[in-house]
Length: 358
Image (cartoon, rainbow, N blue to C red; front, top):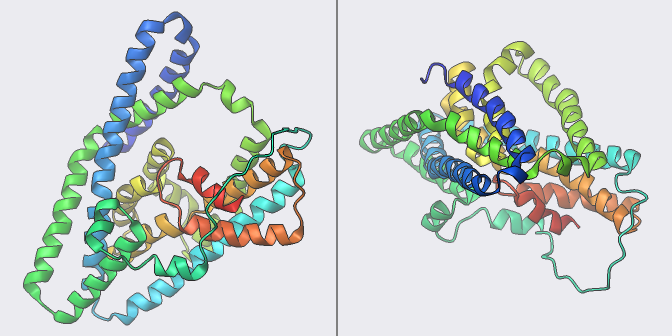
């Protein structure tokens, strides 16, 4: 089963789309049965997501702790960290800049006007740079672990792993290595239900939303999709080919399972375990590198969120007849970058963080 997991996930993905579209199409004639089927699909999808979310924090915590603790020279972590964070911030700012540029050209929402009564709406202000830094340090590390606050979990794991590295205590190191192996073993066992979970998630999405709901926002929707592909081809693939020196066919073959899983769950956090597994297995990335860069990237490298926020800002501004000027665009670039850093890697949170940008 484990050997053909990627194949089973792909088949369940396609079947989920077909079943969901058919269920949506025949929903009017299947009213009593429709609710039962939808409830079963929702249960199956939620069950799968809960199992994955259950493992996200322990996998990130132990893999990162062990990766740092096994470093012979802690200065290596400093070099890796500086390069990684610089790259993440660079790609995020590029993403939001591209989004605003293309959004300005295609002007989604132009010609549509919504007249509303004047109401006072209170939205939280975007966090300052210093508050973002302060929020990385947990008040209570156990609370951060229980709540899944990924940046704080990463900070605590780095601190604990760094101190463990200097202690040179083999018993403690062996214990945490064993815990890391145990959590990864749990992942491989529980991933047996992945095809079933992905089928339920995809089928539920297409059964409830249908195709017509997407057609209502064609300009905005395809603008975001187009931008994601532009960002992929102009930013990410050149980095993979010229900086990492990896053949693109080999790269896509190695991440196909990650792509399907990410698309099905719509969650960067839920995809962390699969990404770690694929990087170590298919690309021979050292665990000490992947255990640091992947959880951090899933937390602060939200380029898709940044693209969505840029396009959505222009779309909403056009609908409400709000003119944007150069200073507004510069503010959006800065705010969206900070907002994407603070966005949790779960479905739907990008919409909430959009309120800060607006």
